[in-house]
Image (tube, rainbow, N blue to C red; front, side):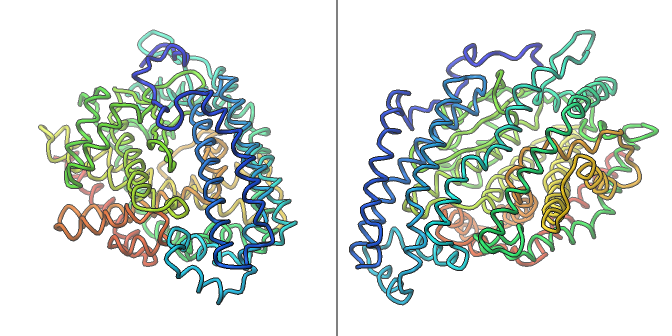
Length: 601
């Protein structure tokens, strides 16, 4: 673990992502930004004319495509620079101007959706069956799906104007936690030396075998959050209130319906997930009892649940070694897949290590122009980062196949599908490492880690999803969200999911105020459904033949051409059924049982 975190300027270029596949320079970006008003004006020429003829609509769609593609590219470049260094005022300025340009364009083009939807539907459906509309057919059909919730042109304009201020809560939370607070967490004593505590190193400290290190890091970390609890609670409440405002403005019955409707995901999928996981909580509680026994502690504390259960296995893995593990583990997907991914990881797709001002965690961000980029905060002493690399690589390859098999207007897949491709890769990495393990200790280590990974993705994300549902329902029923109420609601869920073995600190419930994904409402449940689908598909591909692999690639290539439930059926899994979730819970139980046997030999 580094004693200090480098500034962005001190990071070697070879460790940064190479954004030249988007723009060669900031000056080229500036020129592109200036084109957006011109392209927007071109689209405006078709206002009130979209229904006059098929040719007029086609011309308008082509102009819209050019404007949207330019805007996506401009914003993608600026946002990546900003995420890599929120301390960089120039990057912050570019990201802000890109967001302003996006808001302005959305405002001026707010006439598009209601005007297309006002065209006689029979006539419109005849038009889009013509060959020249092939690149826009899916876009039009999905637009018609929203027809009942699209407002008048004036109302759509107002909502478009509200887009930028609606990001205030999320932006403020990010700056507060990743920049301002991140400089004030202090240090933790490790082996007699003081080490810097940050959003990223906090996770590493909680993996320490030294319980005093874990306790100190945990208490200092949440102590700082407690100092800011009212501010952060107000920010989250503002985000939820914004969701409810948008839901009610458009006429949805609930925030959940609003979040799921666009992707045609039945609300039953969300509720069934929570119900199924609740039924399987006894297995989770058994796991925590086993963890307590293995660790030999009289009380299991919240800061004890992330430390590896196996203490003696060396897990140091360089970045380059991690890439080669991914290459070998993902071999069932074929050489084209592994070569392209690994070449990208080694040559410019990934921003590898932590620096001051960089967003914590990891993500993959793909757009139609440029490579799919991966933000990492890779640490070679944590083998979990090998899984993170494979996970984000799954996203990036999904983006690559989607871009190369679909027109711009229908290439973008949903997050519901994305978490399948990423978690699929994690499962293959686990299977590879387990099969090639040279000792029972390593197998034990991997089993324990995989149990924690499934727990974090299936059980914990479902808990987060249940919290989101509860907070939105409270606001929808007229109950204001205060810091006290948010903490109480979250603590009840902590106690339900962790069971009687867990002893929490007085401020453990502040965890509910530090999850960045909560500012993108009803996102986290997709991790749980994603791992359920991914485990099923990984088994199907690795035990099947060419047909099963082709089914999976057809899923990756489908992009946004299908709704996610339909797309996953193409791959070979039905998420409207509870079977995949129950199967994932069963897999977790199998691992827990095997762990129990290993540790009782």
